[in-house]
Image (spheres, rainbow, N blue to C red):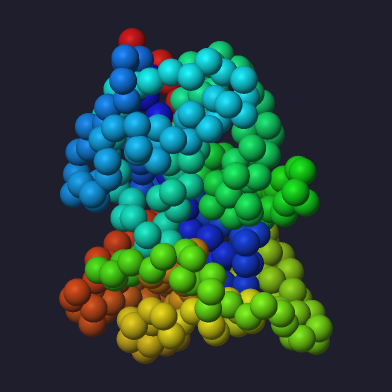
Length: 293
């Protein structure tokens, strides 16, 4: 039997569209052992809607990875818990994808390198900003050229961090459809410059500058904010007490608070009683796969 734990992620960090991401201390936990047929035991209310047989996402991904990596197909009995809400922009599908590949790596005795795991996951996901942070931990800047994912780890953000999780989902496909097909050249240059300086600010731990830049995205937030009915309410609470960005494709909103505004979490909770407001931190460990019996 093995145990796998994978942290959630928040992606984009404002202007770092499809390239910046951060692992968070919310986790998908599974234990698995070989079985004659696929069977899933789900623990916790976040997973009650998922199937319990071979149609489960993890079962299907394990089968796909077995074909891809020339591993004899196998079935598992999986016990699964998760702190990560589904379809809220916190990388729930990415964590399941990582768990699936780690299962094949373990039971197929592949001993894949970290870089190989990163490349496979990024190819499957299409971009690195969710899966790489959840796999390796920390704050990640990455790019993918359809063959290799190149990434660098940035310092963990030290200012207070909050999630505002609405009670409604926002599907990634719907959020993608809201984006423009093209950007004017001058606008793209401006957007890229903002993202570049944001990475430098995060690397230098200049969170005041980083917070200003996080709010200046040109790539996706101007088009997606209208899809999240609580965006303006959260923005009005945050004001000069911190910085706000959409987590991944949404619907979760991410707030980096200022250290001199410790009341921000309580203000968000009071103003948005229908949402879950949770203080979080950066997970710097990444995914864990360990034999337990």
